[in-house]
Length: 114
Length: 193
Image (cartoon, rainbow over all chains, first blue to last red; front, side, top):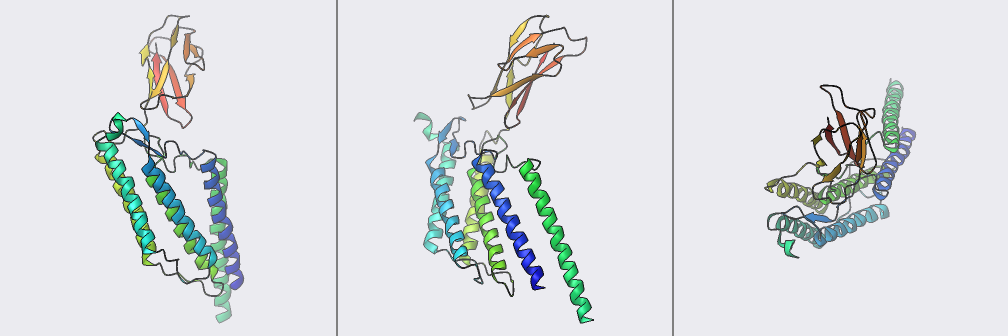
């Protein structure tokens, strides 16, 4: 039974890594559409480069990296890694800034005049 | 009897493993060949990429992969690991942000518009030998690049720049359709009589 578990382990590891590699490759080569990922839309349908999206992307990538790093350091742990409450609060604030920016630009369009 | 049960469970496990592995490899091949289209994985209906979808995708994949790594990390007794409150909070924030983001979009008086490719003029009647310049534009995207084609080249041809030349008059009751298509598959049409 242990041999079967080993086979399944290697098979799933290969498949998941391959899926992740395909998605990452397609993102980096533009086959997965990332057009206007960091751009917002004003009420008058004009676009603007959106710093609130940039900060959210940075916080998201840093948090994801933290989780991956902790898991890779201790893959035989009995539970998923803990993230500090301060960091969770920071991430929530980042999302709040993103949503506030999106709401303001959509309904007020305050950036229209520059 | 116990040995028979053990052998049976081994065979059943191997079959399930082969089935899942085979399906995974088949899916992988389809993805690499482009048969499973991932191009709009994080796109809105209007064709723009969405950061709220992207961050939800990242957290979902990272947490799912971490769970898997931990499950297979224990070689003797694989078990479903505990999920700490901070990870649940993180997933909750991510999903809530996505939902609120969609709420903002759909609360917009303008709503979420489909990506529409406008071809002008929409319809025109041309004499044989006459030419007509067509233009194609997506609202809010001044740099629209399209590929032009016609449904019946024996009635009329069109250049890469959108200049249509009427080769012959269409039979009564029919027309030639001018088609513009962007790289992401958005299509717009016009009619030539």
